[in-house]
Image (tube, rainbow, N blue to C red; front, side):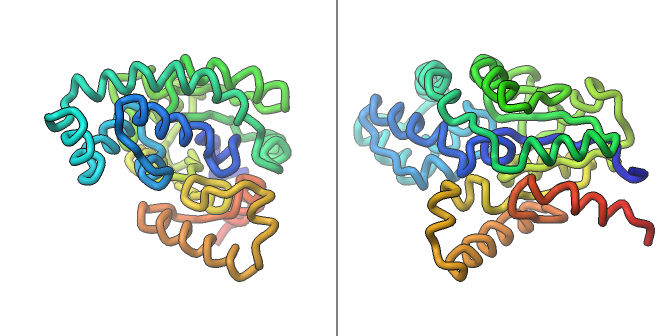
Length: 261
């Protein structure tokens, strides 16, 4: 392969956890512990951001902020965000491994990419303490990237490029244009754009569609196409240069892009 040196994958909704379900129930439950009912849609909206930023986006959204003020007698503060986050992280640690099944075809895709001479990195909106529960489960299924940069490893996470820059160092690859960032969320796509990488969105396995493989298989083809089109529109609007269904489709895409002319 001439054009590309490395691929940097997201985790939930991209290489593991088809539909990105692990954090959803935790976000809803942790807000419930503070007397505020959040919906799954509200929990999904900021997906891809570092988890403290995710909580901040939820708690300051108009409906939830108003509900928080009604329950607690004042608008949410940074201290409130910290309180929610401190409960969220250990709750997510407890359940994340249960959702760490590889996306179908992910292991085979990574093997093909390695066979093409590419290095494999990863970034995530999860903290390292959460990812420590994921690494052994993914490795047991045959997926162990060359590096993983977590949201709390650096002073700033997505949509900024710092986690990608750390991947460049860890993988010893440059220029940025030779690295492909693959993600299912707008913040993760923005991370790749801001780092100067080629960006590829994954539509059907990700947070935007939010369905299991079994749920998708049970839907009529036209409904699946509508979901694909919706996710593609969101990812393209975020700046994704290419959109595929799942990471299983990535090797063929990169082979086509590597062709001269």
